[in-house]
Amino acid sequence: MMRMTVLASGSKGNSTVIASSKTRVLVDAGLSCRELLRRMAVAGEDPAKLDAILITHEHQDHIAGLTVLARRLKIPVFFTEPTHRAWVRMLTPRTTMTYAKWLDQMQREKEARTTVAADSAAHEVAAERDSAALVSGEADLEMEEGCDPEVDEAAPQRSDPAQLPAVEYFHAGTHFSIGDIAITPFTIPHDAADPCGFVFEAEGIRMALATDLGYMPPNVKAALKRIDVLLLESNHDLEMLRDGPYPWSVKQRVLSRVGHLSNEATAEFLEKDYDGGASWIVLGHLSESNNAPELALLSAEQALRGHPTLLGNRILLAGQTAPMAPIFL
Ligand SMILES: [Zn+2]
Ligand SMILES: [Zn+2]
Image 1 (cartoon, rainbow, N blue to C red):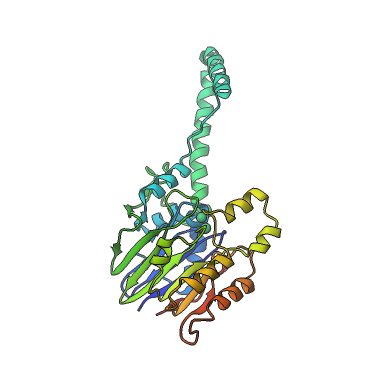
Image 2: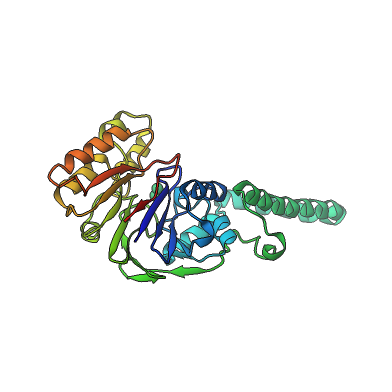
């Protein structure tokens, strides 16, 4: 028996539980820790039984609650190495400055040094205030995320926002396992460091997750064979996107080869390349501004007309405001 529980799917957050009878993994943690825990409770998923977190890519809607959730549950996080590096860089940004700004800063530092002797007491106060602000800022983050700060134990690491209980690397195209779930990550075309989709297999059942991809390349089509439950992106309706509120630059990004799958592209895949073998197809990562659930559904239904839909190819819609009921197979 396997289970898929979509806790959230969309640009405001993505997170899905994949479970066998023995193992449970969370794919992405794109909501706050507090909200993820709340949704797991609503969907009947016990967070204490999660074995690991897997990350598809480092965009905010996939990692927003990651640090706090992983620390709270004390479970390992699986990334590809480039995704992990990109995520660490995001959390610990290095400021780069122009030459003019650098000159300006040098000048100010020089001026400060000339007055430092007279002013040293004031400087100490300022430095203390700055470090206090830093510490309380981190505490705010933990509180905001809704998880215990674990002050004593975590204090030495809390200055490092990228500190996780454990990190494991996987490589796109290379199988690995967590407990009794066999996992095959595959590369997806998307504007992130090393984005991946996944096929999960346990007890003869296969589930797959493919969202955040600009188009359907051959390797993704090949990966999505013999899938029993497929979470597939159906991001936007081309016309709605074209006429919608996004600025032109954002429209270009969404439409690009490293953006998101349109209803039309998803329908084309379902009609021409999909093998028709799934029990459930879950349409996900629907845009709020540039799509309507009815349009995504209609488009997929039309595309699946050639496949039997009595016991197979049933379509569900994943949303971002509430978790879905678990899908058991
Ligand atoms: Zn996304
Ligand atoms: Zn993304």
